Image (cartoon, rainbow, N blue to C red; front, side, top):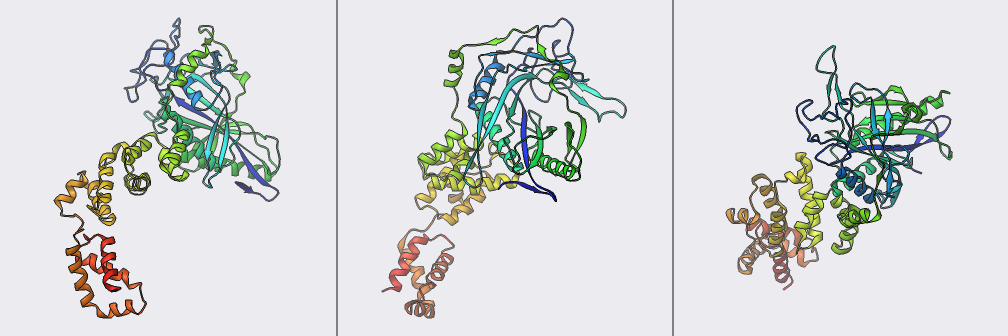
Length: 485
C-alpha cells in the first residue's frame, strides 16, 4: 500500500484536498482598470473600487473570464455557461469592502481531472471539484513598525482562480506532483505564471487522517497560504502526524485553520474554521450573472496550445523518447521548446540526453531557469552536429560544452580557436598505432594469447599520444586490424 502512518492502535492513511489560488494573467484587475503589475510602490495601483469607496460599481473584466474558461478546458473540466458572483462577507483590515466578491454555488467551471505521472510509471487521476473566479484581498505588513500594521492595497481586486481538488490525494509526494502539474498546465495556457515566491500561486491544504480500510472522512484542518511546493509537502507531513498522535492518545481533532511555520517545521492554530453560513454568501446585487454560449467556449478551445500530456505523447511517439524523459522535458513549456529547438533535424534521443543530463545539470547547479541558459538551443544543436560529422568526439564535446557554458561562445568557434578538431586522417593515427605496438611487445603478446581486453588499454594509449583528438572508432579499427594480422 502507499503512504501509511504507523500508530500503536492503528495504521492510518492520509486524505488530502487542495485549494489553489492562481492569480490570473491580466493587465487589469477583476472589476477595475487598475494595473496588476508586480512590484509597484505601496498603494500605487489602487482604483476607487479596489479601495472600497462607497458608490463604486464593479465592471467585470472579460479577459479574466476567458482565462478562467481556458483554464477549465485545460483541466478537462465542465464549463458552466451560467455562473454567478456572490459576496463573501468577513472582516480583514486589508479587505476594504468588508466582503470579497467570489463565486459560491454557481462557479464558472465545474468538475475536471488532472492526471499525475507517478514515479513507478503508472498514472493517478485526481478530481477537480470546481474552479471559480474571485478578487484578491490586499496585504497586511506587520514588520515595518513595532506597534503598527501597514496596508498595501495593490493586490486588492486582482483576479484569482480558486481551483479546488477533490479529497483524492493520499501522500505528500502526490501533492507535490499535483501542484507541479497544475502549475505546468496554467503556464502552458498562459493563464497564471505560477510564481509561488511572488504569491501569484498560493495553496491551502485540507488534511485529515483515518484508519486504513475506513471510508468515512474525519475532521480536517486547513493549512493556509503556503507558498512553495516543498513547504506544502512538509506541512502536510507534520499535520498528518499531529492528527495521528491526537487520535492515538484518545483526543479529537477540531476543524480549524492553521498556519505553517517553515522555520520550525510545524503548523500552529490560526482560527476555528468558518463554515459557509458564517460568510453569509448572497449574489452580488451589482453584478449580473455571467452567461455565454457554446460558440464562445469552442472558440477558446480551438485556440488552446498543446498541453503537457499531449506533448509528452507526441515526444514518445514521434521522437522515440522514454515516457520518463518526455515527462521531464514537458514539465515546463520553456524546457520543451528548448529541446525541440535542439532536436530539429537531429537525433532526438541524443538531443534529449544532452538537454536533460548536461544542460539541466548546469542549470540546477547554478539555480537558474532555462531562459537564463548560457548555452542557446541553436548552439547546443550545433555541438551535436560537430559530433555527428566527426569534427569532434563525444568526449571532446563534453569539454567543448564546459567551455561554452563558461564563455558563451559558439562550439565551432571554440573548436577552431583551440585546435580541437578530431583527427580522422588514417595516416596520422596509423603512425601513432605503429609506435604504441612496437613500444609494447609484451601487451601485443598478451592480446595474441587471448587477453583481448588489453584492446582498451591500446586505444587509451593512442588517444593519449594524439592528445585525445584521434577518432576512437578509427583507433579501434586500425588496432584490431594490425593485432589480428
